[in-house]
Image 1 (cartoon, rainbow, N blue to C red):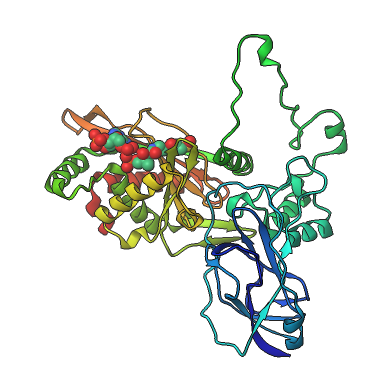
Image 2 (cartoon, helix red, strand yellow):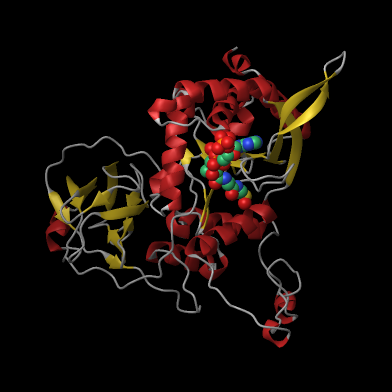
Amino acid sequence: MAAFEVRVPDIGDFKDVPVIEVLVKPGDSVKKDDSLLTLESDKATMEVPAPSSGTVKTILVKVGDKVSEGVAILTFEGDAAAKAEAPATKAAPPQPKAPPAPQAAAPAAAAAQPAASAAPIAPAPALAAPDSGTPPHASPGVRRFARELGVEVAKVSGSGPKGRILKDDIQNFVKQALSGGAAPSAAARAGGMSDLGLPAWPKVDFAKFGPIETKPLTRIQKISGPALSRNWVMIPHVTQFDEADITELEAFRAKVNEENAKSGVKITPLAFLIKAVVAALKKYPTLNSSLDGDNLVVKQYWNIGFAADTPNGLVVPVVKSADQKGVIEIAIETSDLAAKAREGKLGPADMQGGTFSISSLGGIGGTAFTPIVNAPEVAILGVSKAAMKPVWNGKEFAPRLMMPLSLSYDHRVVDGALGARFTSFLAQVIADLRRGML
Ligand code: CAO
């Protein structure tokens, strides 16, 4: 056994290919040809296999990094002779492509360790599903894992970059099936029922009743649709409604915008909302968590996603470490991210790592709505259009600018009292941001 670096092998003409999945972690024991990580260019998906049986020592890249031939991806302790034998091959055949979807945090890269030597490894092509019209997006390693567990990958929703099916998705699918949630009965299928035991989707020849135009769904819609359905079906949602008095905040915002008029930076209500949400999450950390089996993972970082409406569909860019940024900095960042979103230029890293989301329809209208929780987060804040209302101040009705809040939460994690406390505290902070500093 010897330590050496495993490097990106010959991948044909491809350069700067994004790492979309790291399949191992330090300390993992792997067998020869087990997949180590997945690369995906515009045209092909490739897996880098282990050169021999051995142990992963350190990971030198992370999801989102761009790599080319020769770049060291991890250090490995294994059969040093194997590294010389591994043939370099061309890149894999094309896979169906899809745009990035909102994601959980990518694993952080471990510190690079210098190693004795490097091994070029042949990438393995990703295979299309043999039994389905639209092959699901999954690496050969994940397909193999699914086969071992008897899972049909076509039935699994992917939570990885670009909707890719990960090993975790297969495991979760199995857990759900074991608890009676996922597997359709043969009788249900024979009776034309869906996986949930519901009647099949109605098939109607709409053209029989009048002229129609058929438009294909955008790639974002194809990815976000199944994720939204999963979240809607699997998360027991409750929505708590409240109102925040933003009379003072709006006066302050107008003043700051006037003072900063020359800078070209415009502060919209969203930037203040993000700061207020962080203060409420710090007071009620359960809403900054994710369910992981029997554990609740409470995050000690505050990355706030916001739904952005784009011509191609809904995306959720993330303002990272919002607790460490000022309102003006957040306003600049949300405006840059929203512009990137509308131009279709958001990268996976822009949408990863969110701990809580805001969906603001305040610039459009409405009095309330019920947003869908953005799993694996446990809560999302919907914001509707503020309106001037008569509010009783103890002596008289006074005109106040009231902003509607709709907090949807995962009732497995957040109970009603906590949901109400969080929303009511949030409304207080929005009404007077000094409360967020207490
Ligand atoms: N009440 C009243 N007015 C509001 C408001 C609110 N709650 N929120 C924003 N506004 C005002 C802003 O002040 C701005 O007015 P002025 O130009 O007069 O200052 C105007 O509405 C437009 O704001 P905006 O919506 O462009 O800016 P924002 O920073 O508040 O929001 C973004 C940015 C990206 C969230 C927004 O552009 C967007 O895409 N919203 C749609 C989100 C969405 O689709 N959610 C649904 C997801 S679920 O399907």
